[in-house]
Length: 349
Image 1: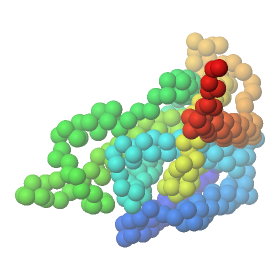
Image 2: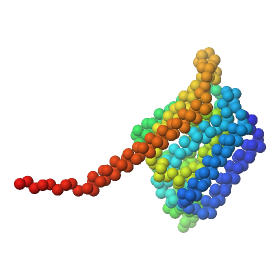
Image 3: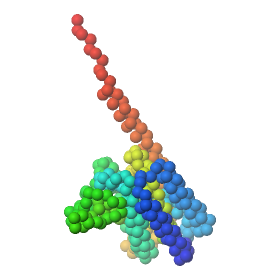
Image 4: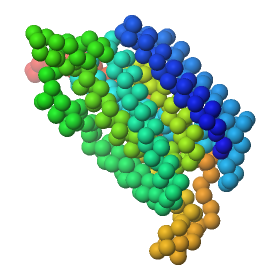
């Protein structure tokens, strides 16, 4: 896929302009956004992603294997969006555990998204260099995604939600820095009684930043399993992260009801991991595997991957909401049993 420097410059410039606009608007008026505000912004970002997909379909054509670049972008965007929704669970835990006031949560999320874009940009550049120069890296990427999928399943079974206090970097910062009690938005430092005080917002930013690094380690190998085009990898990440702040407020309650999301994502990551291993076997150059010759002659089409991802997410959502409904009904029945007094006993003659 031939992407000109001008196209790269425009893409990065527009991304920075949108982020700068968001930062200025939020900094001027810190508040908890309304549902209408979130829905409008989210619809704009999703429409933008679909419009960009249409543009790629119309102008970019196909790769050497016959896959449409537009299909690769859509699939990659859907994978990154799904993983970003999983990120929101951790963001909710961080905001709750660190007691971030609701009106300042937009600012914290905005910083987290900017950090996520920076870290993913770095990982995309590194990942592309590895992919372009070492075909065997797909074996490692594939094995890592399968390992991540297994860890997700184990975490789900153990109901293991890592608290920010468990983060060693956050714990170190709290011990070594003079952290104040007052929240002043994105003002991170000030003086009280002649001593420099650190805003608790800095601890939140540290927690979000270290979390973003961990999520980038999962998401970048996953999208390279869909497409090896750096421009599509970058834009899919941009569109997936842009609406994350609005999604946090719009779906905050619903996210807790998606109890099977981790299982659905674990299946998707395992599927992409196997797809990467198949790709590595197709491109095999390791001399100790089949004498350095390709092991298999076929690959999983991107359109098939898109279908698997959509069906998995649909099943995950339906099953999660069905279980949540059953749990609520059982809870209501249990409450009724506790409230309803037992029938009076008949006196014995």
